Length: 186
Image 1 (cartoon, rainbow, N blue to C red):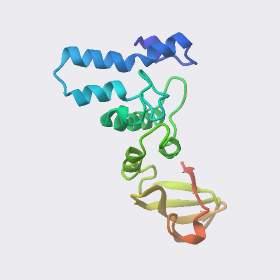
Image 2 (cartoon, helix red, strand yellow):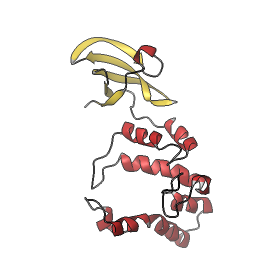
Image 3 (tube, rainbow, N blue to C red):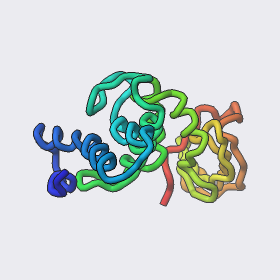
């Protein structure tokens, strides 16, 4: 695919978008001709933009017709794309990419793959300062493998004022179930 298309800062034309969609097949053909690669790997390369509901490309495959490795790479590829700067937009915070993936679970992405991915991704690493929906600032202390968007945090500021620090487990503390992380505070 032409670098002019890949690095275009604005919206792609229909012709340019169709060309971008061919990269899965180009990669498959190149790898098949140049290297001795496992068939599962080749399937993953060509399938990594297919979607569970059939809306993907290049073939519009659905559900289990998409190779297992293709379903895995699809999730990793989207996360990487969303969290990377592009010529046409700035990178999203990892938490927003996680929200997008979770929202696409079962219609765009394999639910089992999303579940496994969410157990391994950490949008808010320990030690990072986050802004909470109750206007507090907190430091992430520990993450929950089963709920990456609901870590344990130590609140140290409320409504712009320093306070005596206290800990909240955003996953398990019932009094704070309505509190969410708005983003990383810089």
